[in-house]
Length: 122
Image (tube, rainbow, N blue to C red):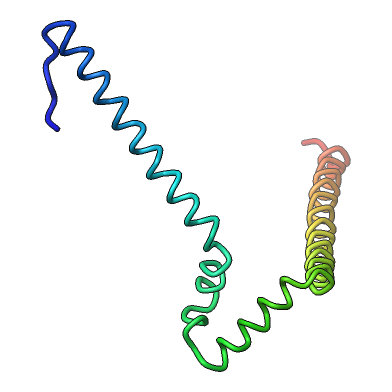
């Protein structure tokens, strides 16, 4: 709807009511989209990693097996532990590398400072 120039109190009330209805309609649309996302996020995530897995033969079978395993509590626990272990390994490696970089920078700064202190003055 085009902009309406409000000229009196009745038009203002009408415009407020119209905007409130529009707000409720948009909230309902957003709610339905969120419900759709909640219901389909697993399938959407798998399809984003391996496109078309749901419609393929062998890969569909493997996807079904993976879905069954993921729904199993013990398999989910094992997969979660493996993922966390891998993440911890990467984090430790990154942490050690970061620590070494910082240590080397400090060591270089101290060495440069010592050079300037011990160098003969001109």
